[in-house]
Length: 199
Image (cartoon, rainbow, N blue to C red; front, side):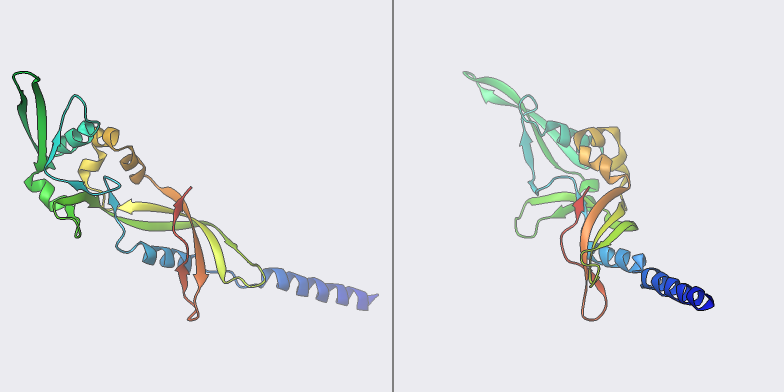
């Protein structure tokens, strides 16, 4: 009887160690790898660079709200003028160009002279919500759900006009969630293998 109890205790201990003694992956290593993949990545106002100076018809051009918000933020200067002729009538055209403040925030597009964007901040992973090995027998690749924030957001981003003109900026000022696939390299370090995707 005593031998059965000892055997049961040994088997329970072995089973517990097999399930609980497996080395857990340090989430700090995942956060570090994700933040390395963020280096050089910034948030930008427009998805694509825009050309300046920009001529905008306030009565027809959908871009007017964005350009006016950036003018209110002090990044653009606006010059309004009447254009037209005797037969067609006249119409107002606004020309937008960078202000002194705008020059310091503008990121020129290297391959397209005259084009650029307002880019700011940097991404920072703050916590791992869930890490699932893609193969539990060989856990060298994980799908990682994590939280991140954008640091270094300028004051003009939080102005109501900017938030209305660029709804994506509102999300940039909050903690967000995303998913990435991380793989363990031959040197034992983790690296992001697939692009980040918001949830």
